[in-house]
Structure formats: structure tokens, C-alpha cells
Image 1 (cartoon, helix red, strand yellow):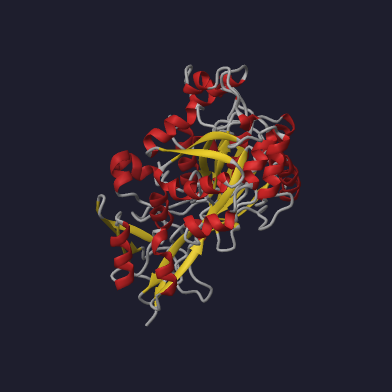
Image 2 (tube, helix red, strand yellow):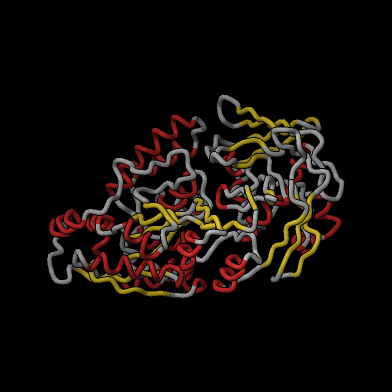
Length: 504
């Protein structure tokens, strides 16, 4: 069950998916060369390429694709189960035809079928899983990608070797990959990693620590490439009081707990962020360019609305959007009745990774009269605390998202009982807007891209007006490359060595 960034980096070199994302951020064929979608958006017919084999010599055909997807459907616990929950049936009428029928049209389904970030569409050799057992297959997976895993020192290093029978060729007909071997060293300590890159003992790093970004940019022997991994960051603002009905029930559904701290914290108390004017003021108080320079070492782009640069609806400067306007923030706070000194006090929850950015935001909020106290917790306690609903704001974000579905339908839909669906499953601020819900639901059922774009822009008008999040930044990953290594694929934040080569 691949669910961590470092796992995805390796998986993208070992496996094929039904589909993949190319360097232009487009969903294209991988194991499937082509596909068609029925007019009602419920039936997908994929044409599976002939001649693909797994690293152990087994054939990857439509029947194996069916078995791989059915395996995810049948898992009791999988981070990707929700991506196939709408699948009604999977059929393989012949070796090159795979037919997937959905119970209902589902807009992001194609993105789910990518090798990464979708992962539900990664083709697992189910026969090898049965022969090796789940634990051994997880340790030494058998894929069909350009490289096979030949050695592994758990927690230390992995060796990937060229798969001689890999099916893909370049435009001139040369077989891929070009490299014979890739040795991956797992280096957790930031300064040690930077030293390895700077001295040339490592020709590539999947992610450089931000504090070394400027040095990498100025180094003559290093090319620093920046890419969006589909991440976003923002302040999730408490929009309703968890001590009151029906919000206490919503908090119970999302957290899975009948008792949570917010019910006591906010009983009989005022929550300024319940007022949309206050939430909009917070969004206007954030200078995103300064935040990126001071806290992200230039590794990011300003987030003026919810959808990141990997998505088809991304706009660099959307209208409407959330923009820095401190005078406008003060006016909104005056209108909301918060005119004291300070105007009000708030606590912001975050992790140690957020602390540098939150310190900048804390200073920016103080400039409009909001006094913010930072509550920095380790990730293990942060994920418990965020569902206690006793902070007025939490630094929050999404990752490896290429379709709007996860970043609004699951995050901002009015929470529903778990047995009724996944709307609002990840709600952090108990936000609700009926019109917004209807737009998200229609988008989820719409396969037509142009129609989805219209719906999403309509929804973003409500998002900017209601400001359930004060957006901050779309973080980028800095990937240094040197030592003659060229052409590592970095789309969706990955490190793909399919077409990489070493220059003489």
C-alpha cells in the first residue's frame, strides 16, 4: 500500500499504471495504449498494449490488469479503496481489452488509474503476490516498469537495474531506459544530503532541503529544477462552533469520536472565524510572495485559490482570488466589529515543518491587529489534535493532487454520515455552504472537462467569498541534478529515470 512520497518516487520507476501523467501534466496511456468512455460516463474500455512483461517474465495483459484492480477493491484496508469504491465491475473479454463499469459517472476516475499519483491503477503482479506473500512482495516488488529492484538494504539503500525486456522505446526506436543501474541512498539528515550533492557523490536528489536551495542555484556544477508535486498549503479556519448542533455531530462523524476538546473549548464562547468577513480578512492579511521568500526559500508559487499548478483549472492569477490587501483586511475586521487592540486572539495549530511559515504568518497577522499564538506539535499528535476542533486555525494542506475532487469534495463538502458517502470526510473547519455542495456534487458526476471547468470556477467564487481556507502557497520541490546526469523526469514531483542519461 504505497502512500508516502518516497515510496511513490521508487514505485514510479518499478511499475506501470493503466495510465500515467506526462511532462505536460496530461493523463496519457501507459499499459493502456488508448481508451474510450461511454456517453453517460460510466463505462471505460481500455486497450492494453501487447508485449508487456513483468520482471519475472509473467505477461501483463488485460486479465492481470483486472486482477490488480480487483485486488484493491477487495482489500479491507487500503488508502486507495475509495478510488475504486464506485467500480461496479471489471471485465477482461480478451487479452487486450479491459472494461471497467462504474455505478455512477465519476469525474476524477482517470486520475485514479495513473501509476502515480493515482496508484489505484498501478498494475501489480497478483500471481507474484500470492507466490511470495504480501510482506515479501512489499519488500521486493515485481513490477513491469523500466527498472527492477535487485538489492535492498532496508532503510539504507536500494539498487534498481535496467529491465532488459522493458517494452517502451524513444522516438527514434531506441529501447528505454538508457541507464543500466540506479543506486538509491536514503539520506535523512539534510546537511549530509546537501554535502553528497555538492561534492558530486550523489548525481541527483529527489528533494533538496529548502535551506540549501540558494546554494544549489548558484553552484556551477548543479542544475536546480523546481516542480510542483501537486501540493498546497493554507490555514483551515474554524467556520462553525463544534459545541453547537449540528456541528458537534459533524465533528463526531469526521473525527470518529463522540467526545472532542472543541465541545468544551468553545461552549458559550465567541469564535471570530465563524464570520466570513473575518476569514476573508485573514486571507487578505497574508503576503504570499514574502512568505515564499522567507519561509520556503523561493520553492513555491503563491496560492490565490484552491487548485494547484498540476490541475487543468489552475490559474496563476485567478479572479476572484485571495490576494494580499492589509488595508482591506482592516476594513473587513472593522465591519465585523473587531476594533480593539488586539482585535482578537487566536491559536494556530501546526507541525515543526510548518513553524517557519507560521512564524511569518504570525507577524503578518499582527500587522492587521490579530494576535496569533502558535501551537507547534509533532505530526503524531497534530493529526489527533486537528480533529479536536479546539483551534481557531490549523496549518493544513493537500499533496500529490492532480484532480480537484480530493481538494474540495472531501475537504469542504458539508460532512455526511460515514455510511452515506465521503463528502466532507476530511473537514477541518466544519464549513458548510449548500450551493457549494451542489456544485461539488455536480462536478463529481461530470466527465466533460469543459463543463467541469465552468463548475469549478463557479465554486471558486463561493470559496473566495466564504474563505474556509486562507490559502498561502503551492510548495515546489527542488531537485538538484549534476555529475553529467540529464533528463530525469520530475513531473508530479516524481523522479523518473525512464529517459535519464549520463552525458559524456
